[in-house]
Image (cartoon, rainbow, N blue to C red; front, side, top):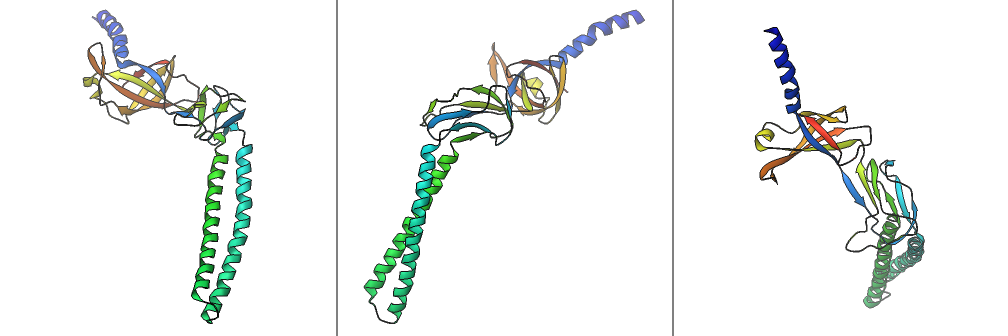
Length: 251
């Protein structure tokens, strides 16, 4: 009897473990295609595919000569217009005092007031142009939106970037330190799960602890069978590849 128990255990135990493992595919937890919102010629590309970058790190720089010239011109114009606006304000105060002493007519006061308002308006417009051109100058530098790994590079020094309705993708980055393992389950299987549950992710003999992030609501038809996508998010200090196989051990 003991011999039969040992044999049955040896046969059934691997099948039980295998039944708990479900095939999955690795996906990026966050993937973003990057471009510059302004046109120009690429001056420097600081990264290669596979590089790890920190949030705010400079990835790419366009030639900013024209944009810096516009900003300098705006700053010069603002200095001049501010001086004119200050002078117009002083003249308005003087004429207002004379008007109160009935030395000047209402029409003269109105003209001086109108000129002062026009000077203030021109100054405000110049400041708005400066903000716009300064933003364009800042946009010649492409920075990492978060801690990431560079997964695709389609930018080279000397390449022209033309903005339009369709952004020109230059670099693609994915969030570093975090991946998603995506599996497909039937309706009875997915009904037993809930978001936040702990799941073991197995990749090439290594194990990671993950949590169920999303449970699919719409079916995907595969060979006339409806299945649902389940995403498990997990952390990894190693650089993994999207599309690589994995397996998930459900709770």
